Length: 122
Image 1 (tube, helix red, strand yellow):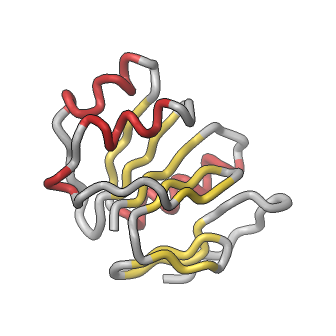
Image 2 (cartoon, rainbow, N blue to C red; image 1 turned 180 degrees about the vertical axis):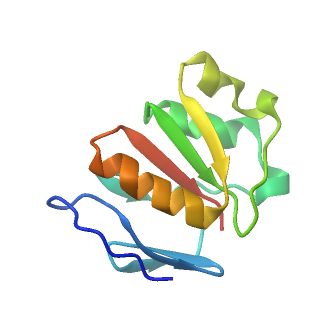
């Protein structure tokens, strides 16, 4: 599905998504990525949803978002709270959603100027 929304300057926004991919500012990604307004990071390399570890979530501590939107693919899934305890202890909200919902929500929050990161698991 293509998504159209105006974006200020070079803010990273989702422009499309589909089975096994997302586009950010027109660039296609077919592997897991972390997206925030200033950058797309492809050095986040989880081993799929069932292989998530505490380290996969701790990765986001250095980014210090207010909200982490976790796109879990075609279906919404929830990780065990113990895996992301360090984030909640750091007062970072963690929301699990299917990937299309995470993309849409991220675009809305980033245009509002919120410090949000989208973790897209592909």
